[in-house]
Length: 440
Image (cartoon, rainbow, N blue to C red; front, top):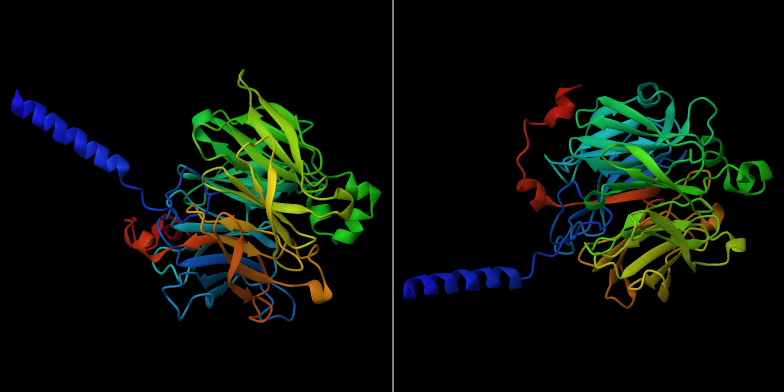
């Protein structure tokens, strides 16, 4: 009996010790798909997708790798490698597949897609597949935007269609080998698309809405001063039964709701987005009956100034929401501990313009890029193009390093993702280059 009690005591003590040991700090982006593995510890690289500029370098779009680990002083904050995509395609967003080996990149203008293999040499991603049949495969969807990893698949949102280049669009799925699976058109009266994010434990997906090719490939000034063009922006978000891929609710969210960020804590059943044209923070929250409600919970800035809140990042503890406003180049940090009443706690001028923001999961670093769209970026002295890294201590942002992409002749930086040597050394992949290369 004494031996049994002693054994139980030891087992309980061992379990308590495991539970009390802090988990390895995640350094990954907080916005990554829950269906893919995360990197832990310090990120080594930032992969940046850039839009080519005529007369700057080779003028082509690129995938650029920047050193991000201060322990590697020779490469910290420096350009390590770049891969040209041979032309200007209005590359925009990118996303890793569910094994984090392959990084998918899409062009908003001609709907080209490229797949890079990161695993063999994370400092120098290798282009292993080009897909030029997106519009044909999908039945007329154009402008691949969000790349969201699902088990064995890549979910891709479209921004437009080949018929009239307006806002009617769809969700498109490919398998990990680059083969088309299906197209799911957005519902009537909510035809516009932009972002898609899944909350697996709720079996719910949210999609947001922007505008079609006719607008996003036209100069911003012309769009804003054209009453007809200004009518063609989305004002809805759609709630989906994710497994069935069926829309079950349409929410009115005026002013082009863009990036979606689900709360990350298990007890929280809500998400945030910002409306670009009305400059508001919206809370999308599940009600007791299972339905969702959309509420405008804060004004970011005066909408008459068209600040264009373009991207958001939610901290891993669901406490801080980082909001980038493109036109004034500012990041505003809100305490959203009470999601119904966001409180502005810090404001930081990042540059003449700023677009994307990515916070690390450990909450210690925040990265920013400058470019929105080639026809919407500022011109002249305000045409700054950069990647900037900041430290975040829960109170303020402190500059760490900056890369001038015009000086480096690399173009306009937009989306960014993180990479790490240790992660790939700890993975086992089938074949030298994986299924995508073998399927070429």
